[in-house]
Length: 211
Image (cartoon, rainbow, N blue to C red; front, top):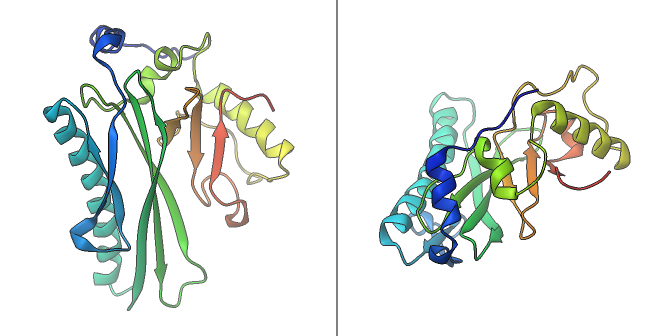
């Protein structure tokens, strides 16, 4: 079974609890667009704040660039977009999770599309947290592996009567979009059409819950 390894540098960084603290969050608007809001993160370490806010704006730019590309390719004439955010974890131990909810509605499309993208940081250092650090950060006795997450996803689907695609064979990698809640539970997000039909919406799987 795949093991998730924590690097020595990250372990030292996360262990220095005396330096960790929750971040302050202000609402900002991308180039003044009231429909595209994002969190402006303020922490004591200015370099960390610069790193975090740069990553957030990069995600917004990627989303808008993708929409503009489809417009330029002539697929659609008009489009409405929007971005909002949630902060599911802003922990005093320095873990900060952000969910950016991105909406896009192309003129003539069957329905609008919604995406939820996640960014996770050590708010003290500005280091972005990745999947290979999940086990240590969440302080759980077992690793998060594609096999374990698949098993949880199937149990969640059955309990909530959300049928997965018939040809879904299971995950081969840890999902890209994950976040922590205030209890340091790890949640994995599955986008529309990723593992289930559109009607299922975005699936939010608490990988530390019992189903």
